Length: 184
Picture (tube, one colour):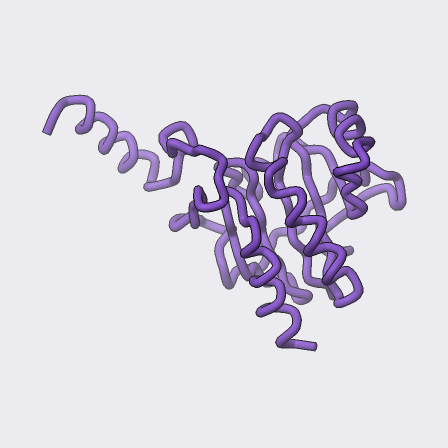
């Protein structure tokens, strides 16, 4: 085994097996996804921790996970410079339109500057008519964000149903159909 491979493997072991986007070889395609295997708090079956961020659109002063209880929530972590995030936008819009009246909402949290997000949403192609906030420095650690886009699907009781790093594409609608419509 060559020295560089040994160093790389040692680094992975020392980092507790967490996925590092820098080594992912991400191409930003629909099939380029990663299910995180090691999480302390953010994993399927756990309760999403509560946090509060300012509401970008000003409907309410702050958005908290506690205030969103009672609905299925897709937390969508993204940025305007993330190619894969933008590739997923049409699928997010389709899912939002289909499920918005079925106890479902999307909550996008951008790791970006406010003016970039506002300019992006002014494009008629990407209105993103759902809840929005801008990253708080603590959110990366609290939600254990490892790459972009990241989606965390949360049940009405706050249980984490899915953690997905990378694009979801057409699978998003199928996942929501299986999750939401089976309970209707």
